[in-house]
Length: 173
Image (cartoon, rainbow, N blue to C red):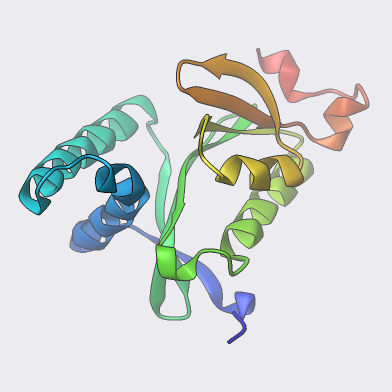
């Protein structure tokens, strides 16, 4: 069945969305957890703690960020956390639930961010774990690795106007 990407929309996360937000986060950790040898209870406890730490870190470090669920029609397909400054659109987190992966949703969301970055002449950036296969998608869409930061690549999309030397977000650095 083909995915109707015209049905994509965003919904600000509310306290009532806490469990679906957690479920999305948990889905991003499933592969590594399979290798852990832990019981389901141990996995749950560990991931719950990591989720809560991530939420605290994001809300304290990215004041004014947008925390959204990605909806496909009425179904939750993932989440997108964005922090926009005068110079940059930071993709803090993008995660698609397993049953919605490889259907063009992530590409559509990222293309929307790239379009906004182009219109506003701002860089778009994201951290991606070195082994994360999503890195190939980011590269296909024009993100380049600008730095290795521990276990993460810091990747940036630089708008065409900035590449051509027009007044740019780099003046914000």
